[in-house]
Amino acid sequence: MNRAAEKCALGLDFGSDSVRAVVVRVANGDEISADVAEYPRWSEGRFCDPTRQQFRQHPADYMEAMVAAVQGALKNCPETPRIVGIGVDTTGSSPMPVTADATALALKDGFSADPDAMCILWKDHTSVREAEDINALCATGQFPDYIRYVGGIYSSEWYWAKILHIARTNPTVFRAAANWVELCDWIPALLTGVNDSTKIVRGVCAAGHKALWHPDWGGLPGRDWLTALDPVLGNLPMPLFTETKTSDQVAGRLTPDWAGRFGIDAGIPVAVGAFDCHMGAVGAGIEPYSFVRVMGTSTCDILIAPPEEVGDTLVHGICGQVPGSALPGYIGFEAGQSSFGDVFAWFERILSWGRSNGASRKGSMLPALEAEAAALPPGAYGERALDWLNGRRTPDADQAVRAMIAGLHLGSTAPSIYRALIEATAFGGRAIVERFEAEGIPVKKVVGIGGIARRSDLVSQITADVMNREIYIIESDQCCARGAAIFAATAAGEYEDAFAARDAMLSPVEKVFKPNPQAHAVYEAIYQDYLRLGSYANRKDFA
Image (cartoon, rainbow, N blue to C red; front, side):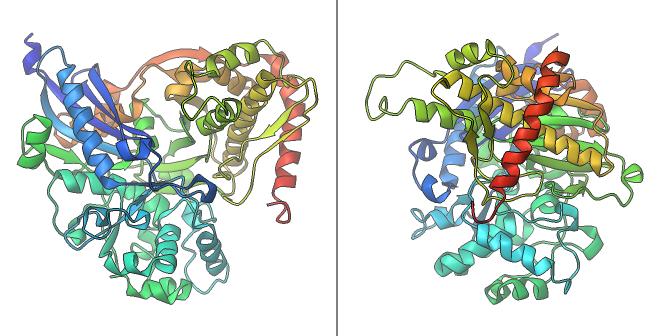
């Protein structure tokens, strides 16, 4: 077989720190090559203020890093691939303002250095007050229950809260924006040459989980609801959009300009975009009632179920349940934790203070911490932790709550505290699973994907022990990009539907972690400590 003529799909995964480009063989899902490019401005900490939980990314970062990653992935291919389609996933909710011609506002003169004109990253929590206002309005009963399909609680991490915050705090940017677009919708529009913001194809994934789009009320919330929230929103061109599509559909065709930058053929289809966790779940071969955990800087948990079995069930306190958000024909449920890998990275920064600002540093200390922590018993020396360093995503979104470390004493060590932090993230995952099952949606299998899942046996084992469930770890390092490639192959017509593409191109299971009954018995008691810490942290006088 002439490998040079083999059909391949290109998956683009826009993460929090970098973009990954993966070339995947359409016939069997083999990952031929990959490359990763960091966002240059983001890596310098520009436009962010962690003390205010402000995290913004310049759209030029996405463009520059995307070109570098795609060119690198193609260069790394052993033979010249025939790219038949492109799929895109991104972090979310990460909306940005755009002009009437669909240009990101930060790419226009006068706005290139204004953080409010940039992409408002998912982890930006500057709009806590606005989320509270949305929840308060929905509690009045004056309008349709617009938050019923997003867990009954709106989060500061999401679309409308972020738009309202900019409207209130930066009228210049708000007036200059003709529309607001999620990153996962903007990238396909960019690649396909959309020059009218009303013509941007909106994926049902972002629209349903974050923008309150739903067929029950004919799309987005109405103007009357928006103006009741704040009259300034009456200046938005409503509706911002009406139609949505699933990710097996074509968003458009690659322009000659972008084809030239990448070094591939123009005119190939670009699939409708979605959030990374949803496409990652498909790359992992998600099946009904599998609970796929994307374990990265945060976690995002995806479960799918047939609509006829879901019926009228609504799971309270999660990030939504949306028809077709992961796979067409299924209800896609989303949950997660606002910080996961960020918890461990934070602890490393605390320990390494003094080695920064030009001081010598010899790599990450996390592997050594993990090795020492693995030798400790469950609960170590009595340290307990709460994982809400970036607020709480689920159950019951609240970005105002704070984390804790308790039970410290002179015998506490860095590894014992580190283990307590790992245990806290596992307890957070257990709380999510318990919420699903308490409200009628069973969790039949737990699957882990992402770098932490594959590289940290301790995290995976503790998760298995805490949940008392087997944890299946997927082989691919690039499940999200693989999922994007699966949808690219589907949009290109290489498979009859996304299910056939998934079955042919999914990543296999690499290893399985089985729960230790003795450890689980100990964790039963420690979990109660975690819940008590959470109850204390929920006190408004503490937050």
